Amino acid sequence: MAVFYLNKFMPELPEVETIRRDLAKKVLNKKIKSLEILKTASIKSSVPEFKRVLLNSHFKEIDRIGKLLIFVLPKDKFLLCHLKMTGQLIYSDRTSLVAGGHSLGGKNLNDQVGGTLPNKATRVVINFADKSHLFFNDQRRFGYLKIVDGIELEKIKETYGIEPLQANFTFPSFIKALKRSKNIKAVLLDQSLIAGIGNIYADEALFDAQLNPSRQALSLSPIEGRRLFSSIKKLIAKAISERGTTFNSYRDGAGGYGNFVKFLKVYGRKDERCPRCKGRIKKIKLAGRGTHYCPNCQK
Image 1 (cartoon, one colour):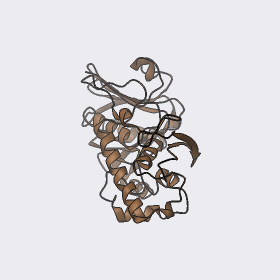
Image 2 (tube, one colour):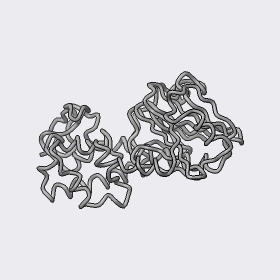
Image 3 (cartoon, helix red, strand yellow):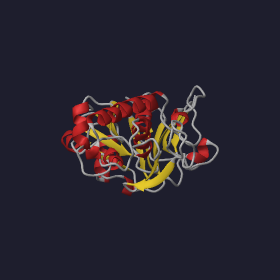
Image 4 (cartoon, helix red, strand yellow):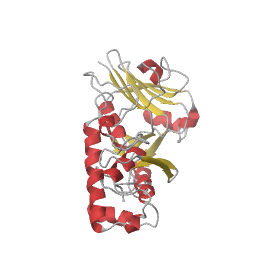
């Protein structure tokens, strides 16, 4: 059985959550027999510590905050993994292949992960005692792996804002996050305010809530804030149920596809007709990102 999950763009909360769930079915409680560190720059802790903590250990569980994956190890140690723009985590054994992250393009999985593994995009390989492997690939080297302890992990978590899948994502906390003198799109992308939302889901949530992304966040009325809050929760839940948004090849073990791309209303649809009002979808640049919206019905 094979599970392929590769996204053309930077994975957001639904994609990273899907990767977390898929890998948790494969790598937990397996003894780490050896490590291959092909690019030390991808490791943000000391290499000796990285080896000492991981070798002969195992992953107890996989957690996540925002887009950051947290592999839980014994003795209050954690392996952090951020895929950033081009990172991939690829699990392989004799019967399955689980590939999550940014696709390098091509018609088949071999091309999408950069060729036969390990390949020129491979930075670190974790080899398990049962002869299965976990590859960390990163073509542009923005992603990273890092060993931290519990104290450092808590400090890192404090830098993240409220998150749609967590109990802290309440309407009062959301309204508090919006009280900023910058546009709504910038607020939604600010991970210190709201964790996990990226370009795709920000555009889609603003469309669903009928809000212009250029508006100042402070200008939202309580009713508008409630609409946006509800739209985010609804879209993130739907995206996870559909295994995220993907723009290249993706099939799961049952031959299914990552389906949320079918539900996109504005993202990537410049100059197409708005599905709500039949106006033209426009693309502008906000908060340094391409932003899709309908100027006719998003006010």
